[in-house]
Image 1: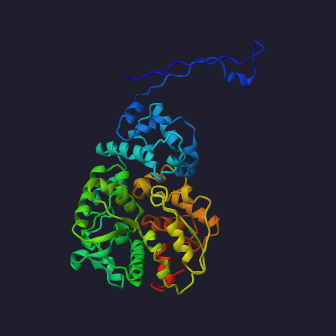
Image 2: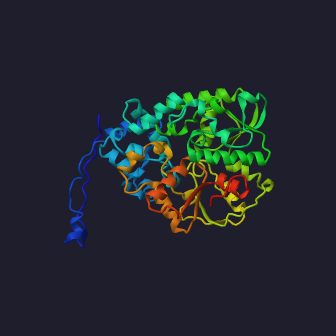
Image 3: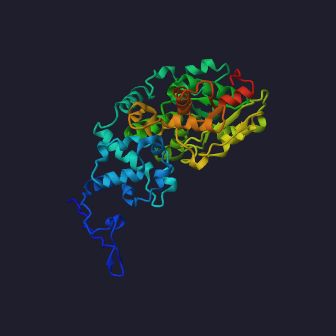
Amino acid sequence: MAQKAKPIELEVAMVDGIPLNGSWNRMFEPRAISEYDLSVLQEITAIPGAESLANCYQCGKCTAVCPVETAGGDYSPRKVFRRTQLGIDLMDSRDLWLCTTCSNCLRVCPKEVNMIHIMPAVREKAVMDGNAPQELLTAFENTARYGNPLGEPPRKRAEWTKEAGVPVSIMSQRKAPVDVLWFVECYPAYHPRGKDASVALARIFNALQVDFGILGTEEKCSGDSQRMAGEAGLFEMLAEHNIKMLSKYEFNQIVVTDPHAFNAFRHEYPKFGGEWETLHYTQFLATRIPDMVFKTPINRRVTFHDPCYLGRHNGEYEAPRQLLQAIPGLELVEMGRCRENSYCCGGGGGGMWMDSFTSQHLTMRLSERRVLEALEYGAEILAVTCPYEVSRFEDAVKSTGNAGRLAVMDIAELLAQSMDLVPVTV
């Protein structure tokens, strides 16, 4: 049964026993606050994982740091709570799909309202009911059918290695242990700009004489973004597959390209028996800086975008900066929103596959806002370390009318260019 809020009577302001007059006092005239229905809030907070939504006490700290709010989305956890409290069904609301799970709200929340748990839990129920944006459902279907959200053939997953120009061992063909098992992921294997970074990284590994191998066609998407978007069942299927494939081989550590895969391997795969030492590629390469031979200076002003899932979710801020600072000629400038307070590219939590949906509810894409911020700080290159970001930011450079003013480069590409392993383009 729905709980009813009790009417609250406010006394008229008095001075020496005399009621105050005027517009200020009319704010305090005795009246009952309208009754409201808490049944929707109770239904949402009864979902396992979504309980902390009830903790919100409307301080508004989350609103100041929510990237969707600052992109003109009229959105924040505080507003999600308030609308749900007033009886708006979150299951049928646009609010359910605008969150990018960036975790900046949780960083500042004094009541630990955890949208990183709330949103996947509620989305899972909505997805089970078939109530999700079509773009997202298409990405889920592609992942289930092909092992990647782009809908690319599994047999082509390792074709990028033909462009590398250096040996890239595929574990099923090598049949011998390696030091590093490189989990490449989907966008670095299929997307044209993702493949550029993969080629650069393969050449860096080769130059450093890293003993590495990849799964190739045996690899499927890590599934972490799908999990955060509400497809827990699909994530479990992907995790079980990847763990089974990895367990066939001997290696000392896993290195991943994608911060989302990094998050999955560190926090989720161990729940299914897949527990290995895992490093993001920037962490791995930062330990090898003394072995890198730089030949060509990168005489450019560069700013770095901290990925949400490498930074706030997993606490790594230094390794990417150490790599950039090692490149001769490069000037590193920090944007105002960086490190713990870094902005979001908009790709997390399934946002990578919902651009058409989210664009209907924002005045500006998050990636566009970030590109403009980079330009405000005089950057000539926006450096990234997440496969989602190169294409998102390059599109944003064009859509904001700044083509030619700002290049978007993966740190692996910048390193490889300075080491003369790939042609210099900046």
